[in-house]
Length: 156
Image (cartoon, rainbow, N blue to C red):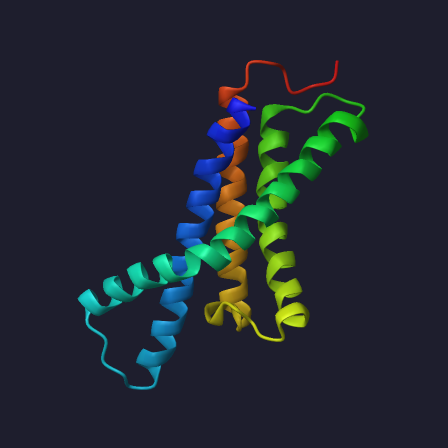
């Protein structure tokens, strides 16, 4: 359990911080393209305010999405794979699971909340940026998990 926490928390934190920062970048870039002048200190201030403001909502959504995704990877690793799950394959699985979990969370929010909570994800590029944050978090989780855990990844 402790190795899971030591792997999950940094992965979640990286995913949330990158997703929040990319959201801010997308929104401020759109404002800049409309001619709004935004100084660098305003960019930083806005990014910080978005991190703080999104933490209780998007931060929790990301945590739940990643938790579900990494649980699915664990089930796949334990029950579905008949051959050895190598460390690179495990890291690939967790990376894909991280990206997919963010995509599913964003797609699920629209019909549930009737709004896209993350304005920076409304466009195709913003959506992909958010998925990239999940990919990065999944990579970090997988890398830490294979480094921290002492038991082998295979079922053999």
